[in-house]
Image 1 (tube, helix red, strand yellow):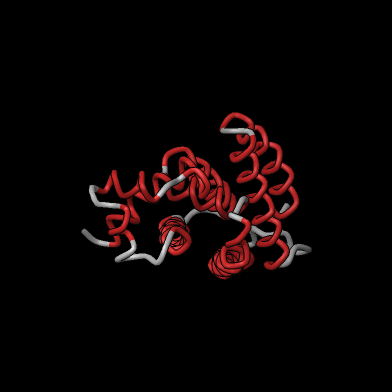
Image 2 (cartoon, helix red, strand yellow):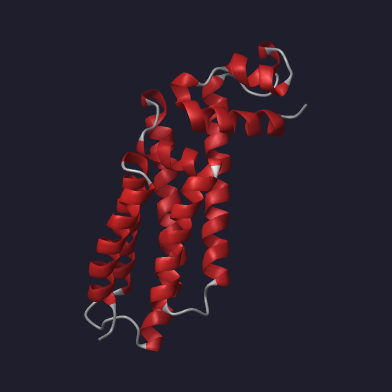
Length: 193
């Protein structure tokens, strides 16, 4: 029995039930150990929750890196729209994504500072990874000359955040409507005419 095995089961519990609804007793029962055995690996529920969150965040960052690498030959429009669309699909099918986004937007109150610090670092890193994408678009003449790389990147993150919010509150169908409208306006604003 390893800490990794416990974290795998805890991810599903935290993703489905949240911090408050998930219990160490249920997690340990699913793993096949006594509740007290969890304390051999984690000091308590908070430490387990933060470990699961950091694991999920790391896997989300791997997705970002992988997506940007494999789509680098596409146009700026296809890279960015595809990124949002793949994230939307991940939310529907991946415990990591669902858990990460829910915790990022609704952290347990007593862990809010730790989680927000980690989320801000995550967003900063994603912004760093997007800079070369936008710089390449400038060189190819795809980005409007009145829009800076920083502006385009920040605005793109705002569109992405709006889709995340709609996924959390409104679901898949509403997120598609928001994506269509937000993308139309965003892309008209940043593309080179």
